[in-house]
Image (tube, rainbow, N blue to C red; front, side, top):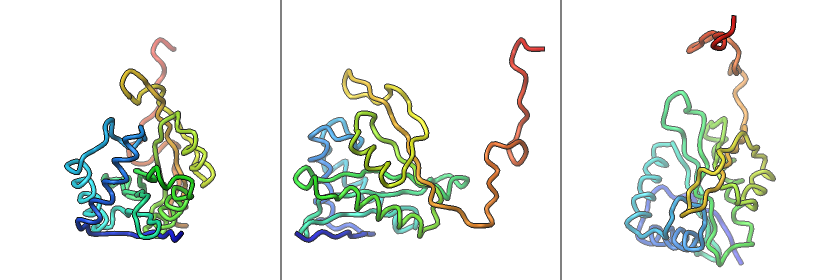
Length: 199
């Protein structure tokens, strides 16, 4: 069994069909990839084209994992579109076709995306994962991601509500970067005001 990663920047019919096959199958089993129902090509094709446009602009990378030449997994990072977050990117759409689970594709994809983002000058990777997806959370933790917060019961799936878990990975910063954090002063600063009713 031969597995490899490819990094497309353009899409032909074969690629569009292959990505749809994976996304449809994962969503059909209830996978948390942003669709309540298995998506059709009218949904996945524009997403691929938009993602690859960002790839060509240097603002994203899409990794496809193939097994014996067949696309069986995928994932991407995408840079934040706002200038003040240009060194931050979101990891998303990490998935493997149900027939290829257990092959370690998720870990290989996320590791490769991490290396790619670091090479592109990304300082911080972020992701969100559904709170009941303990396997994915464990994978991300094993690869160095840390939870920074969660919104309780905000992900709606029918009548059910799930936590949205937020995680991040620090990829490092250039030596001349000034880490101001939450200290007072600097652009956008304002003083803390007394609480209402205090003297």
